[in-house]
Length: 364
Image (cartoon, rainbow, N blue to C red; front, side, top):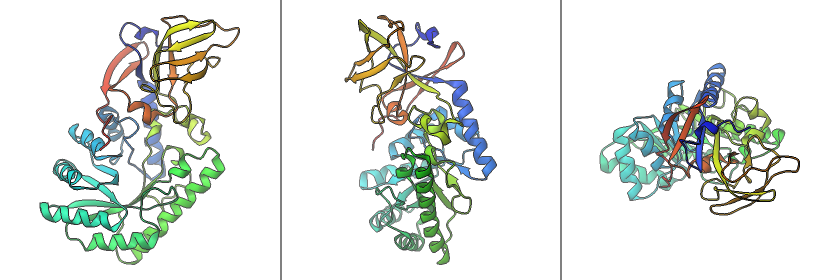
């Protein structure tokens, strides 16, 4: 069944929809989990990029927000939200100017993983006569950014601590290689190994007399795997609030969070059992697989183009007609949300709001 037919006269397609009660339930579930386990929640805004959702997360007890880029942090700061952690390295004079401006507006921290990162922040802070806050990112298995092991992390911690205009906030490590592992046993093992690697670095830093206030890690796929208060002080999941069909296939996730977000599409052509929808690569992400229809498991996708999605209805089921609408389940919600300017938010049989996605497209 299509539960959103009441939107036909109000919402054009393609459109990104949020079921507000389901969203709120997801937010409350994660907030309660963190409260019950004593692990702080610092949710990642890269999923929704939307100040209204971020505000709700903070209202439910989140201690701050994680942003992927300075641009996303600027969107949250413009909405008066914080504290903010940019879980990325900020490099170059143009970004340093923006960081300084943000630093005047909101409590903000950035990540370093190499000595060059620290040295640029030292020069920037000294030149502006201000204090900049810093996290060390540790490489814990994803082979992306981050200090290569506990000794490298200790060297960075010493350099940061010796810099009078840098404030050392803590250590983080994103186990993305574990988050994306489908098998639960393997994912659990990778998460535990990554968190233990992080804990070893933190222990070495503390043994050298340097305080480490925050130890941060974990995404939606690992939020409840290998999370030990002796190793982590906080987690930074993102997708849990909206969910997608990929994460909803994870057995340690689907029992806690429901699908709150869909893409509404219109049938624009139909031949025999083949239908074409008015969505494509420009309006729904496919990097985690072709999105499927909600309510109609018999409708099978077979090809997607920039503005067209070709699907085929199963035998013994009615074929959607031109003008009919279908809901699609995004397979990767973070990349899909980044394609839209706003969420259309509904509750029961009413469109209750349009929430701007002000962090979308902020790649810098």
